[in-house]
Image 1 (spheres, rainbow, N blue to C red):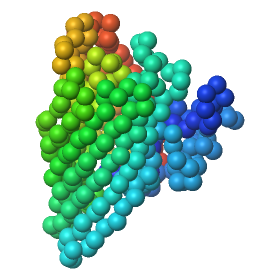
Image 2 (image 1 turned 180 degrees about the vertical axis):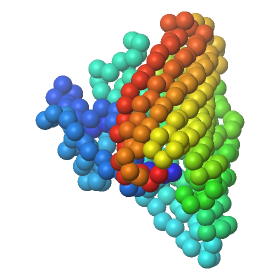
Image 3 (image 1 turned 45 degrees about the vertical axis):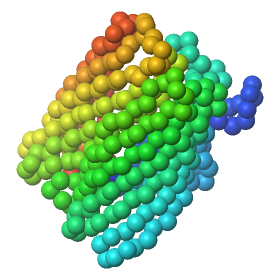
Length: 325
């Protein structure tokens, strides 16, 4: 289900150079219809800045703020072609800006990844039924880097798919397509291959729900020897309601990262990585809109470079209010 409000990896920096103040650093959150969300923290932690960005009164230094799936930085228009068909045209500029002193494994993230990205998107939407819409989306993206122009790219993607409203037996979004990722420097390999975005739920019975996600696309790397990679994420969550108050949750996830190298060839850096996640949870409902949950997840990553391998266990509690059960 698409969040009413969603922030993805949002940062906000005031000023420049040595006097720069980082009010927010990599904040992500999602609020769905019916949820009550509280922003808490000490004075100066960035609460007011976060609310200003969420309300569209300011723009983030990097990251995105979306309302009902629409990026607040997007300009666009639509044309109703018929009672069932709509054509949507939009344009977005996204800025990625790391701080001057931010590093990862010795790499200067600002020098490697600071950039702006211009996206032009065209969507053809055809309403098949009151609950199902056919969507054919295409986009053109131009990425231009401030310092490391080795990564400058132009890419085009076409992704046909479907959108299912929440009252359908299957709800969510499913799209699968193809991207041509053209790196403007001949030293770097191009990418041509599939892309996908799946976020859908299936109601098996009144007490059982299956939620699946799957994404595949291209992302930029901090490593100058491997400028970008093809990232695939897939996961499934099964929620089983027991009696009237209790539920149990089982989840699993898989990830693969395939790095693209310079055409000259590089040794000593991982060419691919693979990760897995398994988890269990239990929840107790107080009424129909308040849930107390406990979850434990195990994470595992394996790389061709042993220093990047890890195994970890994460456990925690959650409180959810306002989601219709």
